[in-house]
Amino acid sequence: MRENMHGAGFSQHLHSAVSEAGKSVLELPFIWCAPAERVARHATVENWELVERALAHGRGIVFLTPHLGCFEIVAQQIALRTALTVMYRPPKRAALKPLIEGARARENLMLAPANMSGVRIFAKCLKKGQPIGLLPDQVPQEGEGVWADFFGRPAYTMTLPAKLAQMGGAEVIITYAERLPGGRGYRVHFVPFTESLDCPSAQQARTINAAMEQLIARSPAQYLWSYNRYKVPRGAPPPNAASSDAGEQA
Image 1 (cartoon, rainbow, N blue to C red):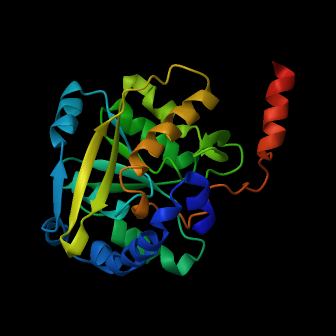
Image 2 (cartoon, rainbow, N blue to C red):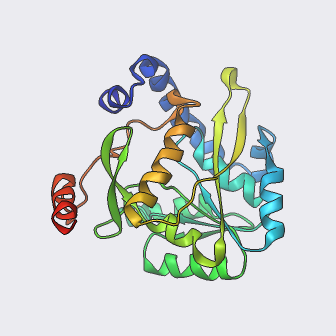
């Protein structure tokens, strides 16, 4: 956490970030286990009209939610208003799978595994004009990403969000749940994504990373800085090798 915050220029928020990380652990049983309607009483939604306009277009929506604030509550709040399919990575321990899947899957909220089967599910949803959601700052598996700067450091970044957004001209909306001070609940924000993704995959990844940076800068203490965002996945080339290959090809 300290290293990542220092590299991003947010060292002054370290103490608050430790506190927010503790809150994220303590709030999880309530978010996962309480009825969605009860959880919703503690959340307000800002700019939902942006989503309504996108739904009216019927081209599908790609919701991008970084590890910011109470990100677990975002999908629940969307699913209370419209059907949603989200991507998740099954836990390594099989015993935890029923618990996590049961906690995350709700009425109107479907799960798609983070593999090719899940990608096919996403593609079908978008072709039907239905919304999907995923975490764009989650480190992808080997071969499923490119190296793109994230707060000035190369981070292995998934290419899937941009590819999905280009299916049928789906609309991209960025969203996060701000944790309000004093235990006053959460404010779920919906933010328009206005940048073009009509570019090579590496530039697409950097464009999405830049949008995440702007979002995180709103509430830097609430980002999950302890997540190993800069790791090199097994089998993926190190960032310097990727840069050298790109230079040789140029």
